[in-house]
Every structure is written in structure tokens, then in C-alpha cells.
Amino acid sequence: MSEAMMELIPNLPEEIGLECLFRLSYKAHRVAARVCRRWRELIDSREFYYQRKQSGNTHKVACLIQSLPVETAVDGRKPVGAPAYGVSVFNPSGGTWERLEPVPDYPLGLPLFCQLSSVEGKLVLMGGWNPARWEPVKDVFIYDFTAGQWRRGKDMPSKRSFFATGALEERIFVAGGHDENKTALKSAWVYDVRRDEWEEISEMTQERDECEGVVIGNEFWVVSGYSTENQGVFEVSAECYEMETDQWRRVEGAWAAGRCPRACVGVGKEEELVCWADSESVVRVGACAVGLGEQTLVTGSAYLGAPQGVFLVGMKEGQNGKLEKIDVPTGFSGFVQSGCCVEI
Image 1: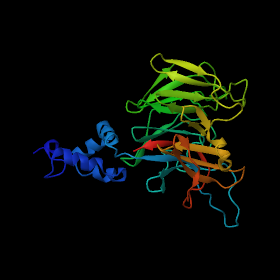
Image 2: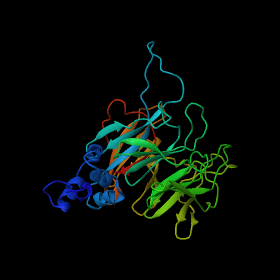
Image 3: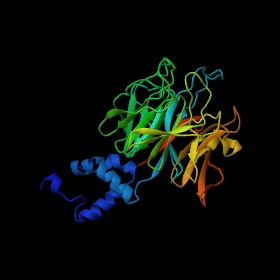
Image 4: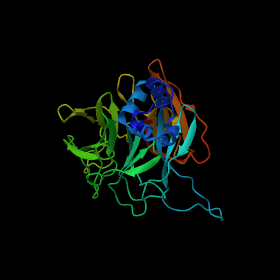
């Protein structure tokens, strides 16, 4: 009997065998894929992911760009220079933390200010600055939780920093930021992860540097930012991309004047934009939030130089509840620059 015709699990009907594989934890996929070619092809397939999702067997984790622990020298002094960053993964179902292995070509730390997004259970890291030369890069790296390893994606079409990003309809949208000359951008692109291809879409109505991307329903929003001539003066407007027409819709008064949106944009019960830095005083500085379905992971400090706090907040009757502080293992208390949710 050929391998393609073999039962998934001997002496079990096909549908029961599939159900057993659907229930495997993603941490077991790497081992399960080595059982036989049929298991490997099944676990790697898009259909397997969506059937697991439809049957409720996926779960959401927070992937965070977080500063790595700093080793103190023998004389007690800490090294001088920019901190190094890695990808930390928080699993709310078990309260566990882990750190992914370094991306290719950056063994000592991620590109500074790189961005995270996710598609079909895969983590996508793109852009940022080379940590050694402080030069913008076009690198794209994809982490496959099933395989437990990084691979390279097709480079971004151009170098840009501090751009907005969001995943919608199995693709990743990128808009705004600034180029190598620190000129604010209004151009936008979309990345198809499976096809490993970039496609340019229409430009926004204006330049938006240091903007933030957020997905609301089936829309990609780019929040605030500023133009080259008004550097540091954050806009109160946002723009919403309409895929049917390939046009942007401008939304006035969507954001608080003068407030940097980076990493702290949330969505209220009426689908209005909210700022997590304004939610409670304990996360007023350096707030970062990652939505995890019925819960949101929020990090931040009460004041500049204060210890980083990590909190979970749930939804109660359509409103955000109280921030509940969670214990964090040694090595995972560093500053969180940004993050995203990955449904694995």
C-alpha cells in the first residue's frame, strides 16, 4: 500500500485520525511531521491550519519584540550602548514564556525597530535598522511554529522605518514610515506570504511617519503619524484602506492630538480607537498592547525609568476590565517595543 493510501492512524477511521491530529499542540507538530510524509504534508498544509481553526483547536499567543537581559561586567558595570532585542512568546493559556531563536544574519539581536505581523499561524518580521550599523534594512523573516525555525522571505521593495503594518485576508499590509533620507512616506504595499510576493497599492492621502497599523473588522487602518515638514507633530486623523476600490478613506479626529500611536492603539466596543497609555497610570510610559481575543496583554511603566510591568486585561460587558499584573520569569522583564498576536 502506498504511503498516500495509508490510514492516518492505524485501525481508526479517517475522520477520527484527523480529529486526533487537530488536537495536537503546535509544539508537537515538529515531531509529528517526522512520522511519515503524509503527516508532514498534512500538517504543513493551509487546509490543516484552517480546519484546526474552525474546530477551535488553535490558540493565541503574544509575540513581543523585547529587550534581552543585560549581563553585568565583573566590576558591576553594565555595557554601554543600544539594547539588543529578541522575540519573546507569551502563551496566556498556560502563562508560559519562551524566546525564539535569533533570526538569520542577526545572531546578537533583532534589527532595531523592526515590525511583527502574522498570517496563518506564522510570524512575519520585517524592516528595521541593522543593529551594528544603524542603517535601515529590507529584510523579511518568517517563523514557522510547526517547523520551529526561521526562513527568509522576499525583501521589502524599499527600505523604510517606523511604518504601519497589519494582516488582513492572509496578506500583510505595509504603509507610511520614512525612507533612508528620513523623508516621510505615503506609499503602501501588500505582501502575500504564501506566494512570497509584494504588490504596490494606492498611496495614502498624505505622508505618515511613526504611524501605527490596526485591523478593524475587514479594514486596515493607519493611525496618526506626521509629515516630513511637521516632524513630531502627530496627526489626529487616520486612513482606512478599502480593498474593493484600492483607495484610502480619511477619518478625521480619530486620534488624540500630539499623542504618539506606536504600539498602544486599541479598539473600543464601538470600534473607536483608544490609547492604552491612557488606560491606567501604571502603563503611561512605553505602553504596548497585544490583543489575544477576550484578553489583551499590556506592558508599560508608570514613569520614565520605572520597572516594566506586564498585565492582562479582559473584556467585561463590552468594556475593558481592570489591568491585572502577572508574574514574569527572570529574563522576560525587559522593555517591550512592539508585538502582535499569532493564532497557532
